[in-house]
Image (cartoon, rainbow, N blue to C red; front, side):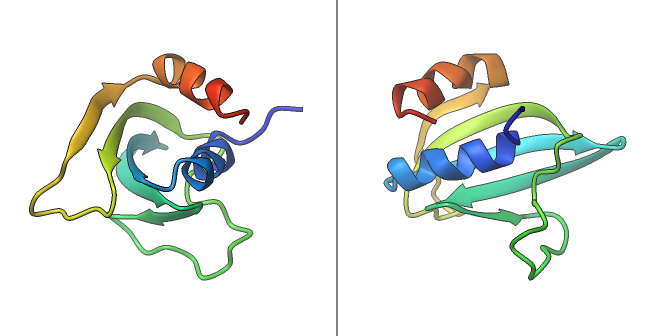
Length: 99
C-alpha cells in the first residue's frame, strides 16, 4: 500500500515543527501551491475543504517542487532553507525522520 505523499509531508512537519513546506503541484493540468505546517495543509490558490479527511494534496497530483522554509511563514519575508526540491530529492529527508 502506498501512503499519500501529502500525508507523509504533513507527518514530516509534525516531526520538524520549525519548518514550513511550500509544495508546488499540478492536478489535472491546473497548478496549485500548498503550505504545510505542523501537520496541516492548506491550498494557497484555491479553497481548502473543511473536512480533514479530504486531502489537500490529492494522490493523483504531480509534485513540481518542494520549498523548505523556516517557520513561522511570513509571505512578505520568507526564509528559505532549500528551494525547488523534487520528490526524489525530498524522500531522504522523510526517511531521516521515519516517515
